[in-house]
Length: 241
Image (tube, rainbow, N blue to C red; front, side, top):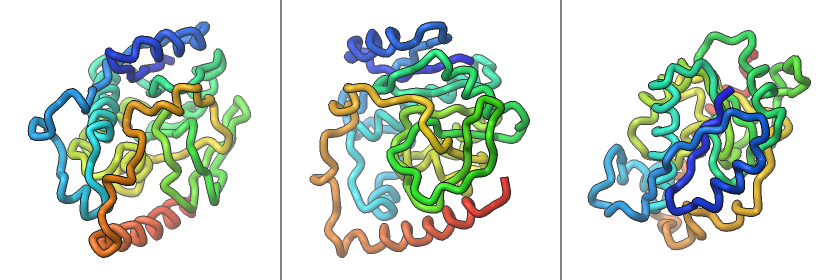
């Protein structure tokens, strides 16, 4: 299974590091979008006002670049006709069983499908099945789960995500796991299939979100949106496999 790794041109050290953990894997580099190198007035495919209202923050250049980078990786997968692929950021540690374990998550599914392979949180995990490789997958009652550092997706899922998420109005990691909205059956593994590397501590997205947050009064619509999303997430998690 191909593993498409998003990597900025200025982060050659990260690419070198992840390559060293890719023994026996089909590793392919995807050129990341450096949001900090693009003037904000030149950003495309973004609804800043909707982001501000729904998320309660101002978009950072790093978030913009991250979002466009993941869309580029999905578009690459579709253009190359890949049936299933892993899409990863360059701050994880790969292992030689990743491809076979990820492939096992798609053995019996022809529907648009995405499985997150690592998260920051999996609170309220509800199992939906176990693969032939012994990995349990399911959905979480609570979220967002955090991180889009590594996930597997099939071609129909990638095609739908490219269309459904074409306009940015949430951070990528939040938008990606909203399967009830994207129309892509979205799951997560109970245990991570990869680890985070030491590069995680030096994010290329942003060091802090504090300066981007709106006041509590200005965020009232974001609180309302999150409450509705919680109900959607819980209902989605309770669905049958």
